[in-house]
Image (cartoon, rainbow, N blue to C red; front, side, top):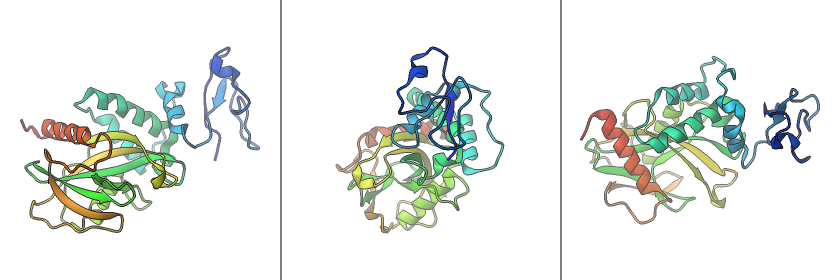
Length: 255
């Protein structure tokens, strides 16, 4: 993997780093950073935060390759989306930074412990019920979704594919290709090499009478009233669902 460099002002504290991070050089043969720039930490815990905090992150002159890939597609989609919630606006900008600098590796679960994932909130058309799965690893009820696979055309396509696979419902109706929310969360040891998921949520509708079936990744799949959720939920899930419903109501013109 080639060196990832960021601007380091001369005389700054960052310019006098301890030997664990190479400055204007590299610990790999043939790789170096130009004068005045600093090598970011290797991919691992904290890499994504280092990318987001890099001065280059706010530099509009950082080149963005015009290549039609899922990473470029989700970046453009996020840039065109204005969330309703102010906190979502702030977090969305960090996603954009991560994608601009990490590019395709931001979607690759094998490239590092922090990466984008796609979620799908499956709702009834009247928004009164949500389909949740009892996650086998997490042992909590959560929305459907998962990693982006090489064959997925976009993060939205990955989210909707995961929803169909995990629910057994093949006639899901995607709301649109615009994200409904972003949610970055840390993971426990049960999730193996994954440490942080930069999750992007989407919405699909299903008939309330649809009978879901559990997959290998979940112990059960069931419908729940949005105001009567089960007790075993990941931290912050109820608040996240409220954000999703508010965003959806605003976008669809519902009261």
